[in-house]
Length: 402
Image (cartoon, rainbow, N blue to C red; front, side, top):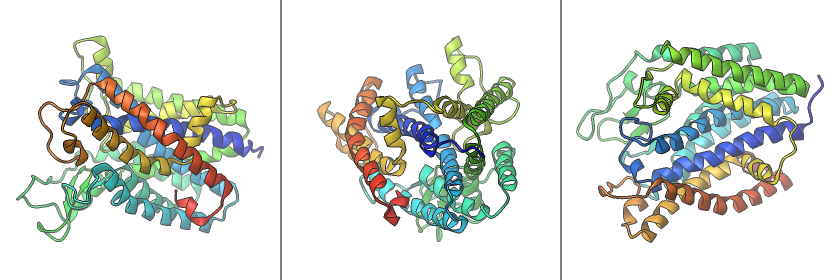
């Protein structure tokens, strides 16, 4: 095989990952700063403004691409000559490490408190990535076609499971799901599960596991294209990206399959377009994944072999330290919320402990979200550039876990 230079190959991947990091900070800053976000779903077109919807929608690309690129990076490690047992061991331990981080540092950065509204906090994207890594570590001994098949079955077919529903927790004083309902909540239906009865700890599953392992498996299988000549690889990326988008449009246009939330005609053509792309994230529907992974593949193709500008280099730097950025961006976004509330004459104690009920009038307009996001990037970039330098200069074992 005529391998492309590793520098070019990784530059395109890190560029896309860095862009994902930048978009993600918009969403989490909005959580702490935006007035509408304290009271309304940012994708509820019956009450939300178009600008707020778009601000939320552009961040939909973050989780799918982050998970997909994680699988792709594992494949590149194998192609680089790392022994398969060592890769599997790193995947297993790193996955468990991510699950631990979800309920410790991530939780602390989001809440600024160890006392959550449910006793163990919320299982979000890092939990899903961690468990997907654990599962992928067990799949790596299989032929890649088997891994591809399992990934396709999970991504294409998981919406067939939508009719299977279990009782949800009804709130304080109500019984907590256990047994099969708890297992199904972990796998496919967001909700609260309990441990050791009604008096035991509770956990909100915000990111059920399906279909995230399938997304990571497909990213791993795409890694084979990175052992091909650049021209052929680019054609594959373009073809797959366009196929995802065409599949999305065809399935979505007829509300045929792939998302329980159907689109409908709205008061204007633009609002109708927003309804068309308003797909389900929790858990991510097939249409949500086609809508987000398709453009991600096109971006990978577009970045192939391009000379990075200064702005590109900044995104590449962020993309080389994604977990480091992720851990820091939660307290950064949270601090922006506290700072803006204090400067705006609002009671910042409400946003300091995020789960406390806020007054009816609280938060700021959308321009403040973007200002806070820009300030957050100014704070985070020098730290990420420093840590990227540390990872480049040193080969300590623990750096592989960040």
